[in-house]
Image (cartoon, rainbow, N blue to C red; front, side, top):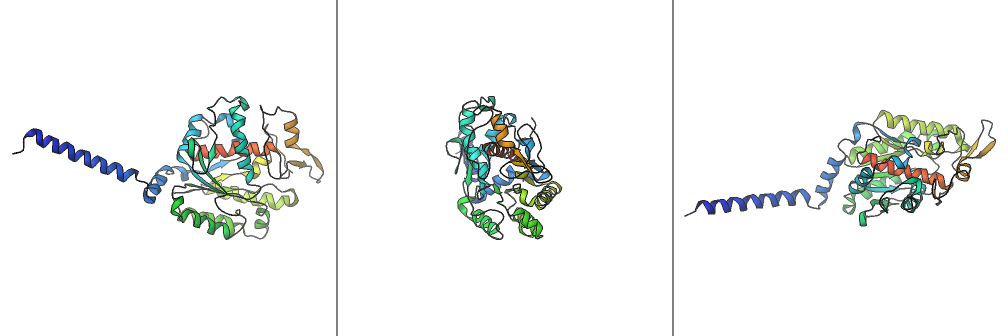
Length: 313
């Protein structure tokens, strides 16, 4: 005969078994579960556009909690060639710069660490995860699909592509929609649990009008369609003090309207500020260190925003 004590014990055992089943189902590491987590994580991202530009380079304004949230929740894959490497080399140099109190920061050591896999508490960022850059169509689309369809990458929830020098020609030949904006939108529809980051192309004084028009088209599209935009070109048109340079090249040389070179805003700014305090030396493909510094600050602002920071608090 079952006593009340025995019935209670059986009941408690059943409850325990149910709780174990729920836990295992919810937190198992198969790809389906990862996609569910990914979907929940980005549930609010597509409700409004996110624009990262020269207003997003004050690294001291990003809360420590937002940095940690990005490291905890994001799994990023980045495809680029030389110009796009400025983000990476800038992010590399940022670690020791902030560890040594650059910009007056007093954050935990190595808080800006990153690696492929996110080991030791670093941001999970797979650099050059996909071959080429976004100027090579349809290769970049196929490479993205191949990467995301690989079960080994089922946790990846952010895709970033940068340009080399093709954006101006894409506009001039009327291919910007067909070979960039439309395919990116289609990828968003095919992979709704992934945040896709659009980028403008670097500035190019040799084709200034087409370059500006192309990048303006990308900005307008992203703003009107609630996209995430890393405005590579806009960052290059402003020095850290917020001074704007209308006619500027990717190496930070600036010109007057007649095409006469007037100077280089990056070297001028670096020479008037203290290395190790206001800026740090790092590799910066085709350009100057402060340009890569700014790109790195903006990259972390981007990651914090995707992870849920409102960009203000």
